[in-house]
Amino acid sequence: EVQVVGSAVMAFRQICIVLPKDAEEKQGAEGTESSWNAQQLELLHPLFRRLVQDMLLMDFWAQQCCIDLLMRYCRLFFASPDKTSGEEGEDQSASEDFLAFLKNLKLLLFSASKGVTLAAAVALCYLAPTEEISCVAMPLMRCLRQATPEASITLLSAVAPLVEARPELFRAMIREFFIQSFDPPEMKRLKLKVIEMLVDDTNVQMVLRELQVYVSWHSQPDFVALAVRSIAQVALKMTSVADACLRGLVKMLDSKCEALSCEAVVSLRALLQRRQSSKESGLGSVLPHLVTYLEDLSAPTARASVVWMIGHYQQEVARLAPDVLRRLAKGFAAERQEVKQQIVVLGLKVWAFHFFNARGEVAVKEAVPTKEAGSKDAAPLKVSPDESAQLLPRLEAIVEHISTLASFDASWDVRDT
Image (cartoon, rainbow, N blue to C red):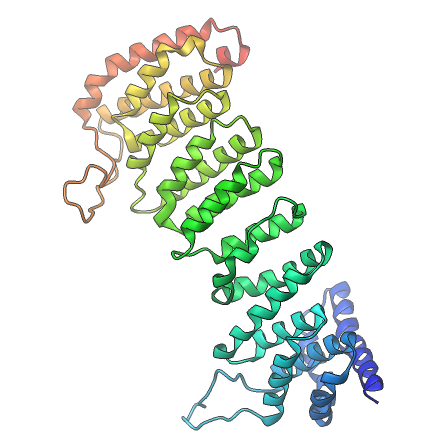
């Protein structure tokens, strides 16, 4: 009776696989689980062919257990099908029983049970030759379309590792993972994670357009923050769109949505730090955009963040930073508290840089050659000690002016800065 066999398979898996694993986790022992599983799975040697034949006739729960059990058996006792030749060059033909198991797994991909389909897809990803794994994508997408909202979250959580391991299988179906406004919050988070895995040169523009739509959903601030974070991850992964993402994030700093502007600040800092750590950072061409947008920004948090970034990376734009400080000093009295604090810090940083540079004590980065000879953005512009010496008297006057205004400010924090 196939039903009896299915029940026996479920009991065998529970006793020999699940319970020993739980016991090992509680005891904290290491190195014994794999040997214990091997000893128990050896009992299936005379039964493997029978289980493969009966697997198609079992009920759904037994099929899932049987697939998991036989997958573990195959990984222990069958050679990988991708290894077609041995050490001495002779051909290694796959076992007929193993091929029969793979054939049945492909049939189970079209099961009415989503759990069986998922189990068969996972087993094929572990066992099948690389060229045959592509058959799992469409059945999994069918299950995601047909699943209820509650079941789709669990199903997508299980599919996400497959997408991460084999993104090429699902890349053509990336639109299936685009988010609907009525999706549950956890589903939205998982879909964003999958989209980040699937993005590449062929679809990055489409993905960025879709993420820009998500950013406009201001009624869902938590999701908007996740969307901005995804834009930063795409920019870190695809350097070809990094500059466009940086300019977009700067525009988001002035948003009326607090979650959007705050997350844009965090993402912008992460991108700038990553670019600074690379040899061809290109910060000398990015930071001027920040200065341009600074005049149009009205949100105090956004203005303070941009001023902090200019001060933190001011060595990259050593000739531009003094002019930024001059313009900010003119309107210092009208700025908000957090902006005033950052202006004071910026003034001290700019003055300190040119003070030590005038004495020849600043190590300036060497220019990084680019394909375009004579390009102004090839590397950060160097400031000679003589130029710094000429700027110092004016910088000292500006810093003194800012310090005087700050000392009489109504805010204790600004006075203490």
